[in-house]
Image 1: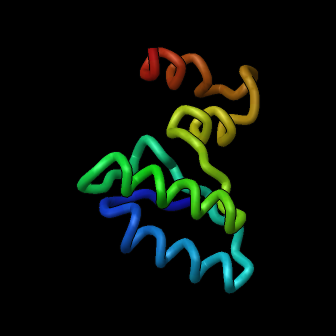
Image 2: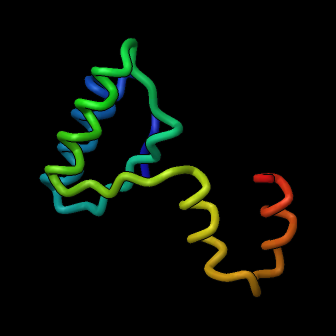
Length: 81
């Protein structure tokens, strides 16, 4: 799972190297930026085409919890709302 600045340069290159090394790569899109929206979106398109999973912070948090039965579910849910 990666996120960061300059999605079209540093993050892109890191993710592509991880994918080449056969790691599963999840890019947390709402935790990434670039100087321009066009550069950011181009990076996401390229990463998706290379096999990275594009996810959001909320998707990751709830996937980590697994289900509403998790003891921390309600407290996490209240933070997100």
